[in-house]
Every structure is written in C-alpha cells, then in structure tokens.
Length: 312
Ligand code: PMV
Image (cartoon, rainbow, N blue to C red; front, side):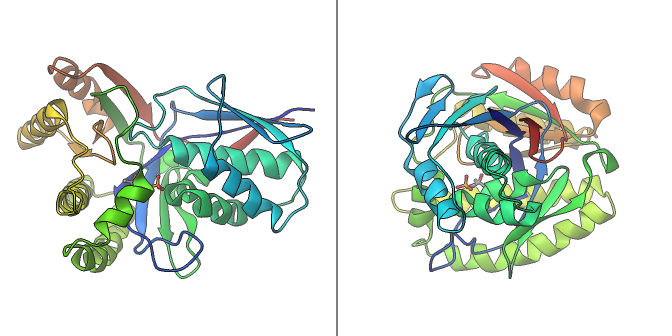
C-alpha cells in the first residue's frame, strides 16, 4: 500500500541563516515565514527491500535524505522504504524545495509506518533535516524559535491572505547550498550582529503579523532580507546569489511601493525574487515583473496549509 503526503514551500520574512553550535541542526536565531499554496512537493512512500529515492522521476542518492531516515530510525522502527518525490516548481533554486520536501517526507513516513507523531514532533524531525522544513509542517504564518526549536503556527492562511508573485530569473540549481553557505557566513565579522539583531526583528515581526500591519511587515521583511544578503556578501569568499535580473526586480518592487502599491520583496539563497503583496495588487505586480529582461518565468501563490496526508 502506497502512502501519499504533500507539503508546500515556505518563504521566510525574517530569515534563518546560521546554526547554533552542536548537534541537531539548531538555528542560531528565530525566523518567521509564510507557507505558500500552489507550489507543492508530493511524496509517495512504499515498503521495499532497500531504501530507494526518486526525485522528479530520477533515482537519486541524497545524503540529507539518508540522514533524515537514519534520524527517524534512531527513534522508530522503520522498514526499508521506496520514496518518490515530485516538485511542481524548480528544485534547489532558492524556492525552498528542501522545506516542502522534508516536511512531506516526514509526514508520509509517519503515516505509512503508523508512527503516531504529532505535528510538533514532525516539525522537529523536519528541522533536523533542513531548518526551514520545520516551518512547512504548518500553514499560514509560522514562527520557528527556541528553546525547543519547533515551529508554531501564528495565523491561518485565510486570516491574512497575502499573495506572492515569484520572478524566476535562473533555472539551474544554486551554486552554493544553504548549509555550506551558512558555514561560510558564520566566520564573517558581520555574523554576531546578524544573530543578535534578528532576535529583535523576529519579535517586531510577530507584532506586525498579529496586528496585520502590511507597511510595518514590508519594511521589516526587506530589512531582514537585505541584511542577510549583506552578511552573505561579507562572507569569504562572498556569497553572491543574485544576478542582474534579481536586482532589476528589487528596484521595480521598490518603485511600485513608493508609488503606493502594497508590495515588498524577499530573496533567499538563490536569484529568484518573491514579491509579497496584498491580493488586489497581484496583477499589477505580475505585469511589472514579467516584462523585465532576464525574468524567465512568473509563478504565483497565495498562502496555503500545512503538510498533510493525501491518501494511504
Ligand atoms: O533550511 P535551509 O537549509 O533550506 O535554509 C534556509 C535558508 C533561507 O531560505 C535563506 C532562509 C529561510 O529562513 O528559509
């Protein structure tokens, strides 16, 4: 019997970039995200004679996936599994495919093997595989903070229905994976300031979300994003995830906001730009980004729900 689960990527508005010392893949600072709806990872799990993993139809060796299964097996009795995952969006290009991937995987394995995990437990296992994956267990606005470093939902998707227009500016995988990039940034002289100030940003963002203050959240989310990229640039060698089209999108979004449109940007460890807006602005934002040179595809999403079992 095959078990199917799915999860959506999430986009951090207060960014996670850097790990606490020691085991368990613990973030150095809290983060806050929105979970998307139309982008998704679907994962099928079956019994097998040995572990196999297929991503988008291709058999793949994935050390992070093997480590996640080993982590689950340190606590639960889990037989060899055949795992098949499909993303309906570009993989490993700064669109949080590892977040939706591990959230769907842990949810599918939990259901397939009847492990009886609650959402918080799934969030912790997902976090140990990929920090941002902890947040994709839940929908809407989601926080990830200590001391337990388990994600918690802040607001449901329909409580403040924002819209996200994603400008894809490069197709391939990113040049430096996030874990390696974080290790590099942790040696930057900017790193201690990044960690301490992110705690303050996180507290303020929770207030803007609770009061649904778009202008406050817009200013703070751009600040967190640009500060993270400032830290990335001030690593050695510098991490430069943007291309020319990325920068053109950021300028265009700032122009739109200066003209009164409710929109702000965020960019992760890749060249794609996520424009977060109120729903009434989405068509104008899409049109403004689609005609920029170097924008090769526009994806759109609203806010969505958490990881879920589809059928078994
Ligand atoms: O959890 P990881 O290893 O995919 O790292 C996520 C890093 C960022 O996407 C840049 C920020 C974030 O909080 O999602």
